[in-house]
Image (cartoon, rainbow, N blue to C red):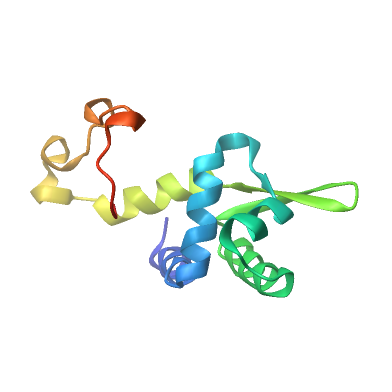
Length: 117
């Protein structure tokens, strides 16, 4: 990932609604979510949701797939991982093992503390 792509991605995620949408899509996994589900989950009007989805698509963070009259949106996990790699490049003076969070050490969902991450 280049600096330009990273700044576009970060700018898109720099809005609370777009970040919430992206997190919903990441949570949904590769199956994604329909636009109506996103609107309901986030209490966003359709026009507002469409605007934010367009911004996330322009940044290359999500993709939409038409399913009849509806659109299913999915996070682009390659783009997300590319952004994470860009942000952590040369982390801890090149000692990547000292910086990388180990997903295997995360507690099961039922044991997580509530609050912001």
